[in-house]
Structure formats: structure tokens, C-alpha cells
Amino acid sequence: MELGRRRFLGGLVAAGAAAVLPGCSSGGPSAGATGRLRIATGSPGAVFHRYGSALAAEAGLLMPDVRADALSTTGSVENDVALADGRADVAFSLGDTAVLALAGADPFDAPLAPVGLARLYDSFLQVVVPQGSPVRTAADLAGRRVADGGTGSGGRVVLARCLDALGITGDVELLGGPLSDGAELLRSGGADALAYVSGYPVEALVELGAQVPLRALDLGDLVAPLVAAHGPLYVAGPLPAAAYGLPAAVRTVAVTTYLLAAPGLPEAAAYGLCSVVFDRQGQIAARVPDVRQPTLAAGMFTQPVPLHPGALRWFRDRARGG
Image (tube, rainbow, N blue to C red; front, side, top):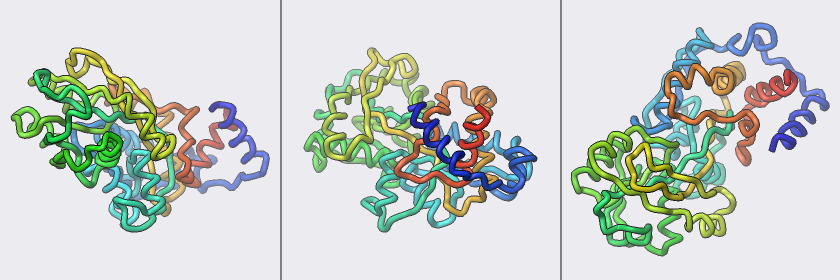
């Protein structure tokens, strides 16, 4: 991946793609960035919202003329729509949701045109049940009530594809609602399982696991049929036991997470936000120490979502600087 990154960026430099972003070449990444920066995140208690809040705080410090705010949302689907209709400037999105947005495929009504700022961490489908539950496998969810993020979340997309791969789509009652409501439903017995796609760990699940002994379902065997049906959007990933107090770690379905932007986001703001993501990781870690940080080597690979010109310049400048 590192070789591909160097070839791609080296080709841009060799081609003479050296247009200067106003204010950024001499005044640093924050020069010229002004106004409001609305970052659509996700449900409070999940990683999108916690990490997005940290990015907003650090963006305000790096770009003092920018007022950055983290917006609570239902998740990736709502976020991609918010970029298109002007309610957000920047948004977190699962990679499979972003592909559907570009194509205008369900759950989107028409093609959208988000652009990429960076590839972030992988997000994981986390399906938990009470430890004493008779639900032992994903197939056992048939006939059960599952609290999930609802129609505005990218997690609903991932979960629906998993249920389809199992052949039980019509046999599972999806309850929807924000993460906090889902956690309460599982705690009170109003749901048989809680399914959520997020980075690890999810703060709300850490809190739930301290109240209710939990067990996670192993979903590793679903990766192959998901890839066969939808392409290489999914990989197997680990769900550790410690944070939620699980009796054992399990395998689960992982999907890439992107930081996206509206096409009209000013280049100085896009450049500055890329600097926040990669240059201020120590400060971000101080705010959210348990959130995994993205790597520079993978950060530019947001395909098929095209990079924002400001992000493209940031990665090119970083490659020049070594």
C-alpha cells in the first residue's frame, strides 16, 4: 500500500500539479480557512460522535477563524444526505454506505456526490445479547427483536446485508432508534439483541456491559458471502472481550470508515482538517484515548470516492516533505 501511495503522489508531483492553495503554502494549513465547519457524526456514546467531537475541538485550535461543531446524527446514511442538502460540511461515513450514495442505490433516492478527506479506522458490526440469552449464533436472531441504529444509520445497511446472507431478513424485527435507546431496550428486556456498527470500543456498550453481563455473537463466517454479494467492502475483524466484559472475544464483520466532505467545502478548510486528523493525533488521543487513529499510509485511499482537492494537496505536500 505504501508503494502505491508513493507512486500515486509522486506522479502528481512529476506532472506539475503544483497549484498553490491560497494561504496554505506560507501561512500553514489554517491560513485562509474561515466560517463554520459542521461535522456530521453519529449517536452520542458511539465512536463517530466522540472522535468527531475531538476533531471539532482540535480544528478550532488549529484554525482559529473556523467555528467547528460536531453534529449528532443517526449515522452514515443521514450524514451523506446532510452533505448533499447543505446541513453538514464534513461527515463520517461507512465505506459501503458511501458507495451506495455515489450510485444512488437504496437507501438513497438519487446519486450523491461526496468527496473524500481521509480513510479513517475500520468500524465493526457489534451484536451483543445478555449472557443468558438462548441466541447463540447470528441465525438464532430469526424471530427476535434487534435494536439497531435505524434507517439513517450505515449500521442498518451492514446488518440488513448480514441478515440477507443468512436468509432471515423478514424474520427479524428491527427496532431502530439511537444507541442510547437500544442499550436501554436490551437492558430492560425490550430487545433480544443490540446491533451497532462503530469503532471499538463503544462507550455506551462499555457502560451497558457494566450493568448487564453481555455476550457477543461471532459473525466471522458472514464475511465471505458478503464479499461474494457486494464486493471487497468487508473483512473479518476481532471484537475483543475486555471492554464490554465479554466471556470471550469473537470475530466480526469490519468495514472501512471515511471522513467525507461536501464538494463545496473550501480547500483551506479541507487542507486544515486533514492536518488535524494526521498531525494532531497526540492531542486527539488525549481527548479520546481509546479511539484508534488513522494511518497516513492508508489515509488517502478513499476510492471510489474521489479526494477533495484540498485533501489531495495535503497528501501531496506531505509526500514532498517526506
